[in-house]
Amino acid sequence: MHKVTSEELFQRALKVAPGGVHSPVRSFKGLDRAPVFFTQAEGAFLTSVENKKYIDFCQSFGPLILGHLDAEVKEEVHRMVDTAWTFGAAEVYSLELAEWITSTLPFMEKLRFVSSGTEAVMSALRVARAATGRNKILKFEGCYHGHVDNLLVKAGSGLAGTAASSSAGIPAEVAAHTVVAPLDDEAKLAEVFAAQGKDIAAVIIEPLPANYGLLVQRPEFLRKVAELCEKNGSLLIFDEVISGFRVGLGGMVEKTGIRPDLVTYGKIIGGGFPVGCYGGKAELMNMVAPSGDVYQAGTLSANPIGMRAGLTTLKKMQRLDGWNVLEKRTAKFAQTLKAGFAKKGLNLEVSQVASLFWIHGQTPAPIRSIDQIPQNQGGTFKNLFLKSLNNGVYLAPNAYEVGFVSMAHSEELLDQAAQIIIEAAE
Ligand SMILES: *Cc1c(COP(=O)(O)O)cnc(C)c1O
Image 1 (spheres, rainbow, N blue to C red):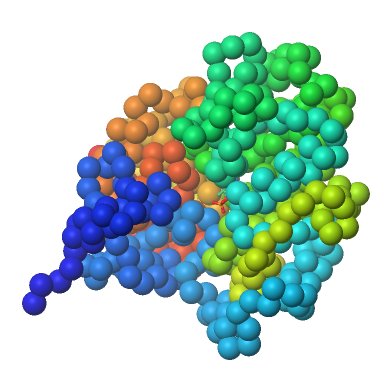
Image 2 (image 1 turned 90 degrees about the vertical axis):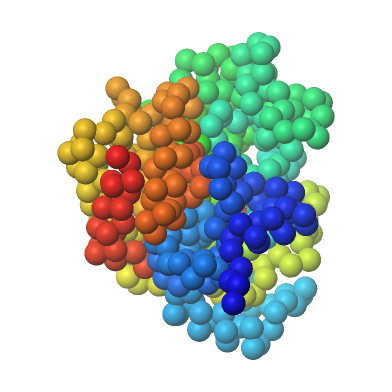
């Protein structure tokens, strides 16, 4: 009997979806093979249509901090599916998650649930513009904030801070409302603020940039960002869609001690279901409809299944001291990889923060901005990725995506995975 293969499914998918996928990085573009089609997931593992098992370090790009199909989350989700799917009305489930977040994280005075990280960012920008009466948004090169029109921009060729759209379909007039600055450069940032500060409604930053490699920022740089916002009357938005509930319960707000005006969440907050959230200072959030005149709505917002999965995930992480457990396990995993690369004389390095890691070529100093990423990152990764895949390790299929360790990745499994990756790197 003929068994279906990933290659055949990809050929079919190419006929019905652009590039055969529903989000670009899933496509294995530039990797010279069809993406693996999966049928099942459990704990730290994915199973393909070929019935091959992989240790999964993608974890759906971050949401699954407990791993796939966590037993406690599963039970709550089943219970919710048997209770209600969506109300489109006031209900108790979002209230419970909102109360848990606002009582645990004091900087989240008030919040609104949405259905994705992109939506959270888009909505936070609207509030910032309404609150300041200004139009411009400053973002940093190398930070990703979802596919918001305004933020799909790169540095333009004009004066300091000019932006050009990085996607077709975005009018120049829209990109013109965005100002771009490099990460890790206080002087450039001061220059941009000196020229345009009075027009900047908000600065949005991934306080731990993890969408273009892992670009760990110096605390002094982050403090400078906050200081310039304060001086210029611009709001500070921490986009914690990836770092929130990942680097610790209080995310980068807790780690840096910086208090932003607004914070955006996604990924982990929904425990594997589509949930986003924006919130922060009550006076700002009170501007949102129906209490204020900043309109923002959603048919499936605060979906009860996502609310339940999110709350169960967060409470379980808190109960297990999960963030400390993951930090230790991932640091050890990174050490094993580094020692293995060194032993084989390979020119590879691992950047790691909490349960995030990124493998890249060696550089003289830590990589903090995109221009410091080695030129051959794509080629280095391709070889490493394909051989790891062959031997049962699924890394996110792109040289600039980070890896995620979940509570389902035991120390033994991490050791096993490290050996496969080290071998693949040769
Ligand atoms: C993933 C991500 C987003 C976008 O979230 P989606 O749910 O994919 O729309 C925005 N900002 C950051 C920092 C992210 O990591």
